[in-house]
Image (cartoon, rainbow over all chains, first blue to last red; front, side):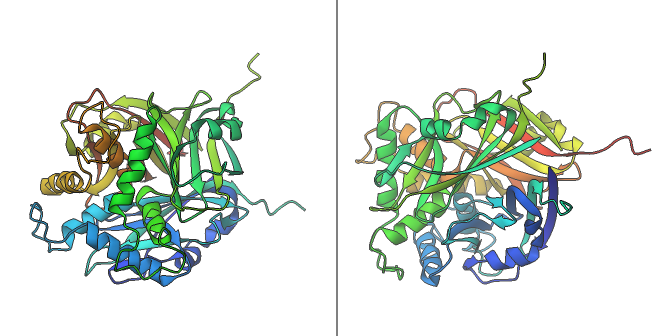
Amino acid sequence: MNFFQKEIVLEKKPRGFHLITSEILSKVPEIKNFSVGIMHLFIKHTSASLTINENFDADVRSDLESHFNQTVLENASYYRHRSEGPDDMPAHIKSSIIGAGISIPITDGRLNLGTWQGIYYCEHRNYSSNRRLVATIIGELISNNKT
Amino acid sequence: MNFFQKEIVLEKKPRGFHLITSEILSKVPEIKNFSVGIMHLFIKHTSASLTINENFDADVRSDLESHFNQTVLENASYYRHRSEGPDDMPAHIKSSIIGAGISIPITDGRLNLGTWQGIYYCEHRNYSSNRRLVATIIGELISNNKT
Amino acid sequence: MNFFQKEIVLEKKPRGFHLITSEILSKVPEIKNFSVGIMHLFIKHTSASLTINENFDADVRSDLESHFNQTVLENASYYRHRSEGPDDMPAHIKSSIIGAGISIPITDGRLNLGTWQGIYYCEHRNYSSNRRLVATIIGELISNNKT
């Protein structure tokens, strides 16, 4: 049984839902070392989030952004947390609805995602600083010395 | 420390929220082998989801379906992803709100759920193919050789 | 590799969103023993939930409560589960939106949260009984005998 942990910085992206599967695979190549396991990804911010969704049609990403903008209002009359801009409190709400972390099974050195699944980074602020992620893998290493 | 992983296919169910605790227990009997651990369940699809909720009154399941249908619209004017039917984009949204994965503690060979908790499979499409799950358990095996 | 698991009871709190990072740290001091790992927290109830959000401005907590009260209605005409009071079915819905469990990376004996992140216990009932949590840590112990 083995543990691997690494902190990574995501490429900067504008507000919206972004497919980052290939970015994660290239920044966490250690996935390949595990025959079986779980990868946990955790975003260290409260106005961005992580989820799994469709990896093909970019319209899915823009429709997700539209839906959350329609249902989590900017400038709602009942908000009291207003000092950081109209996009700040909605960003906090979206982050608790979607979540700061995801766990994905690893099988035979690969993320065991469905055919149409990809990893999404959801940026809820208009302007954001660098977003940091902690990737933690727990699993069994592929043995290379079976000769 | 031990790892167990298995892919299972859920019994086909119609659109709605379904209690599947007993189906999971019968398809993953290996839970019984772990004295302590965590079971991670992951659904390999982007238009269905997994959650934990009340295991008793079936009205809770139908009310959850009603709530999500009221708040995640079909045919919203701002959707661009429309080619797969009016239930497709709402299904993607529901899957990111509810989530594709859940983790449940294991204690003494049993899922350590609260008295009223059960595992839900949430089917968001009107017609769906077989839904595949990856069950991953990490934990300590019950030792049987303590004689 | 080591496993630690413990059941704890949360201090009673009224309906709303509550920051409990320091309560968790004092009730699960074993976090300090792990050099690397993951802590999974699981609430054994279906009308309360756990999330990660902003640890500074208490207005964020009250705005979250306001948002969920506006969007998850009491007494919606389409609810059938009504016998346990008007706050009961909304509590179940909120629990599936926010979730019953969170996983947090551990690094060098500390929860590896972002600067502004804290652990929230979200109480969705007007009156609740004691809320029980299962804390499970998996990771590598800090070795103390490196002399």
